[in-house]
Image (cartoon, rainbow, N blue to C red; front, side):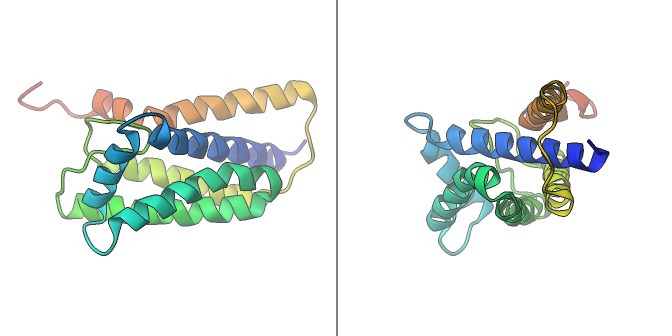
Length: 174
């Protein structure tokens, strides 16, 4: 299997896992969708933020399904959503709005550079998947390694808030 084929599969698993966790985190219990709606209103303070939240959630839920049945469409939808999320986060950062990220559930960390970097990384993964795919099924042992790499990268993405906190420059309060 080529490196390109392996990268395609890692991107497919990574994007699928990240969007699965993101969608599930918003509907997992009472108040989860309300917190997500509050964050969306803070990130999109104009127009119809409630509609934006609903459409984004439906899109997030559709990405893993599309990646399973029509991978190119899944990568395109993921890239479109990630572009929208990145623009909204960049606007909040630029306007110094302290909006808490509700990407993967409740958070105390306001959106910032780490969230932008995370989204750029995910956009790059979606673009690579779109450019490199499709790929033949690998041998089971290689598939296990690719899934493990994807899960490790997914974990790093999901822990963006914690990693940003750990690597932030100390402040006077620290």
